[in-house]
Length: 150
Figure 1 (tube, rainbow, N blue to C red):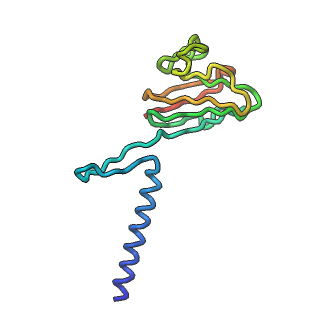
Figure 2: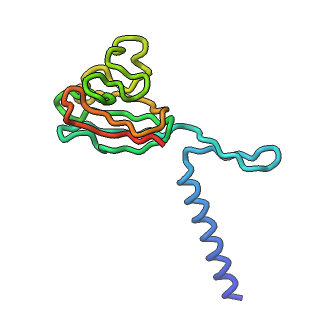
Figure 3: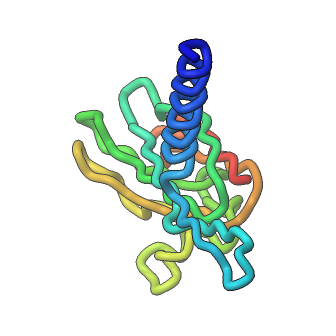
C-alpha cells in the first residue's frame, strides 16, 4: 500500500510539473474549447524584441522573430544611431522602404528610423514580411545587423 501511495504522489508531481511547463511555454496564447470540444489555440499578442545599439554595434546582431513581431531599437550609446534597412544610403531592401519617404505619410510603414536616435531614444518597427532582412546604422554604415522573420 505504501508503494502505491508513493507512485500516486510521483504521478501527481509529474502532472503538476507538466501543467506548469505548458503554461510557461504558452504565455502568449489563449486556449479555448470550441462548441464541439476541439481545442483552439490563438496568439493573443505579438512578441516584442529589443535590439540595443552601442558603440560596438547592434546587440543582438542577428535576431530571429516571427512575422508580426515588433522590434524596438534602443540607443545605449552617447553618439546618435539611425537603424534602417539596407542598402546604404537608399534603404530600399525591406519592402516599401526608401529613405526618400522619410518625412512623408509612408514613413510609418517602412523599416527606417528616418533620424538619428540620441542616447535613450528608441525606434520600433513591426516586421510583417518573412525573410532575412539586413540593416545598418545610417550614421555609421559599418555597423550592421540582420532580422530573420519566420
